[in-house]
Length: 134
Image 1 (cartoon, rainbow, N blue to C red):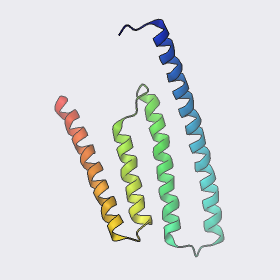
Image 2: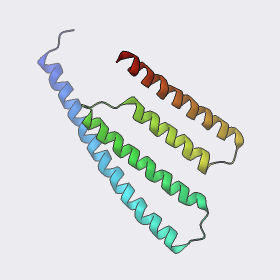
Image 3: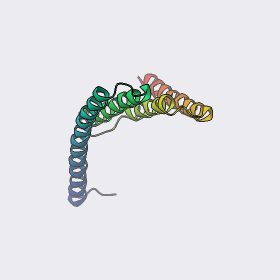
Image 4: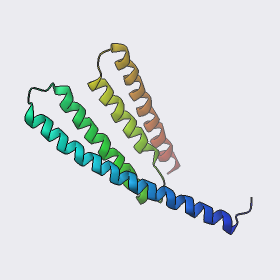
C-alpha cells in the first residue's frame, strides 16, 4: 500500500481529534475528582455515623480517578501510545474495589480474585517477555 499525502493528512487529523478528546476527558476527570472531594467532605463532616464502606468507596474512586489521569499523562509522554500495564493496573484496582465494597456473595469474591490472578499473571508474562528481549 502506497502512503500518500492524503493518507498522512487524514492520519494527522484523526490523531489531533484523539489528542483533543483525551485532553477534554482529562479536564472532566479532574473536575469530577474535585467535585467528589467537595461532596465527600460534606458527607463525612455532616454525618460521622456513615458505614465504613462509604469511606472505602470514596477512597477507591479517588484512586481510579488518579489512575485515569496518570493514564492520559502517560499517553502523551510515550508518543501517543497507551502502555498495556496501566490498563492492567486499573483492572486490578477495580477488582480489588469490587471485592472490598461489594462483598455480598462469596462466589463473586472468588471470581474477582480469579480475575486479579489472571491480570497479575498477564502483567508478569508481559514483563518477562520484555526482560527476555533485552
